[in-house]
Image 1 (cartoon, rainbow, N blue to C red):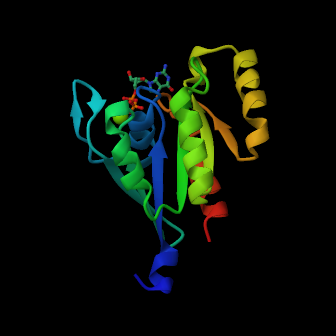
Image 2 (image 1 turned 180 degrees about the horizontal axis):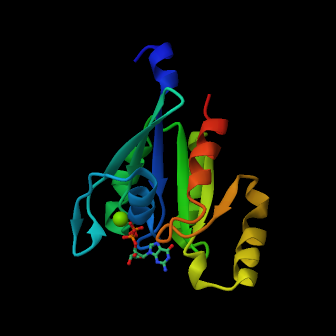
Length: 162
Ligand SMILES: Nc1nc2c(ncn2[C@@H]2O[C@H](COP(=O)(O)OP(=O)(O)O)[C@@H](O)[C@H]2O)c(=O)[nH]1
Ligand SMILES: [Mg+2]
């Protein structure tokens, strides 16, 4: 791809553990997505794209299960940005630390979206934010299911890519 073209085509990968809400987030952020699920669990890559300010953002959602870890690495190839989704009722899981280390190694910028805030007290959200502070990345919060807080993700991507 030429440089000129590349600038207008942004690859974003949505990662995180199983059941944190990655597929729901993509559905409610993008609208129509392609997904492959078995009993409600993603078993391939979710895909959808949006066009904004003459830019096309391609979203690739990875399956969260341990057995699909290899797909995450493949998906991260050439990624411009990553959205790491975590579940507010669980906070950071072991997989998340692994993912964060991988992103640092690869030098891929990312944000963390604390999802399912509808299920926890405000104090729990603050606790998680405190835990994440030292990572020095943008932390967003909301509910993918109720479409709360998800619009900010796109603004954040556009401000950080290019
Ligand atoms: N209460 C609540 N449930 C959510 C939210 N986002 C996703 N879920 C639910 O969490 C479950 C797992 O969501 P899914 O998108 O399949 O997670 P994925 O495995 O990360 O793709 C589903 O039952 C969703 O309806 C949210 O913001 N609030
Ligand atoms: Mg999924």
